[in-house]
Image (tube, rainbow, N blue to C red; front, side, top):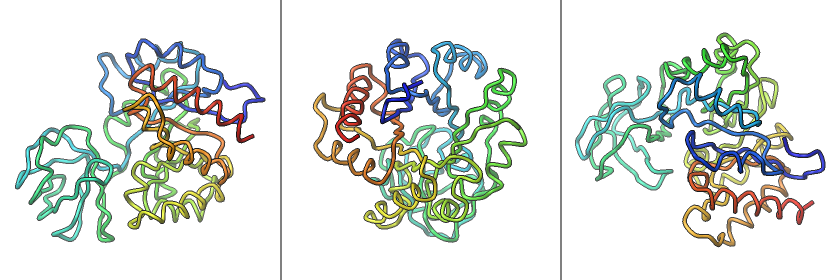
Length: 302
């Protein structure tokens, strides 16, 4: 855990087999490790969690819940893409891949199968997320089979720290508690409905997280991310800021000026805990540079 005097804490996404994880876990501002359950494992969830637990940091298991993700692979256009949940939505309708940078048109829906008209013009692979913001969207079911497998493994091991994606309803947290009664839940706010939940309930059902990867796509107008971030931390002063943090370090050893200003802005809103996402955490040099930079920024801003 980070020392009490540290003004800034960080949760780091842990690639399950990275050989640099002991160094990351020992960093003074690291207060936990996040296992993204989309990442593949060569062992069972229980074996992986037990191994990561030996690093000496709390392990947060990030369940995908109702987040729409690709199952299998497809090559558009006019291909059928299967997703993690059956859905219902008025068609044709726009959808977005790649953190909102690729727009496609869904022409028809048949349960968990989407028929895309015009893209992305590449292989669409397993685990990719899809954002559909139309108000008619209904997603049937919450926890996936994989989510439930992880909760069973956590129960077996006596672990209880859960991150829950796409929270929109009180029943989302309740479903986790039914399977893991002692769960300590971080509620990831990633949609307009999730923002409404955060404004109504604050931290009554768990600590809030501004999960900016999908939230930025889902707020409909990019500038609305500012008020969304403000509303979340006002609803829960202990809220965590996550995703799109210092991502430039994943591609270049010198951080972008905008990334540094972004951390300063989040700090000014009241965020004191930050979670580093997948991209910056896949390599030792990028994640360690991000941690060192966040440590320096915390000292500068305090």
